[in-house]
Length: 288
Image 1 (cartoon, rainbow, N blue to C red):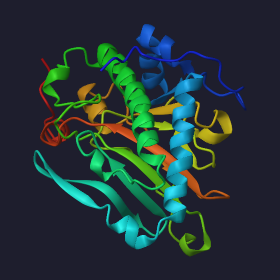
Image 2: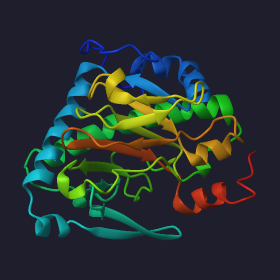
Image 3: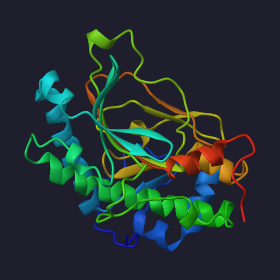
Image 4: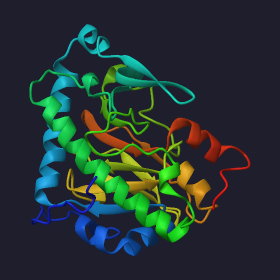
């Protein structure tokens, strides 16, 4: 996978100033900037160029159309599972609770991508490529700074198009209706992502994403600080915290209720399931 391919065209003006977003190409060229943000704040913000931001924006628009126009029976037919090392994984449609619907895509399982609207499949794969590139950039920056003796080839990562292996790393299209029917059900409660290394979430068009800043303890409302679809929030996840022996701390975050339906794109870079279980075991994975 070529993590250096990026687009640096000008993007829309930034709304309210927060921690500076790092342009993706600069993040690839100066990984220490990303590593420093992840260590200090438990998250970093990566700015996409216009072409990449458009891929994210278009995917979000088509995914929203899918969730809002597809009957429940049609969604349910997309639910699939696969066997991964140590257990069963999910791809396709799922409704974890009344407030959230999800379509999950993985490398090697693209048949789970909805085919209606007709634009969705291509747009999902385009945004997948963008967010995977961002996540791999952040992971490699963090590994070089905080876990340099962790051998990447031992983690079982499956990234980049063309692999026949099924990846443990999910790309999720998450839809929060924010309606009266789900008013009593939280969109999510504060949590850290596990068993991932890092999670990449573009700022959405509807407010909701809240992240806790390790440096200040304050809760940052991503949509009030950063540009929708053009800025990507990248979290430290539980496996990276373990591999860094606590130098990096997993980022606590949640999704609050918003004034309108929210469509969120979420990519979590995960080791193979069996490797993740070993990393997160009480004694942890031995680092060379």
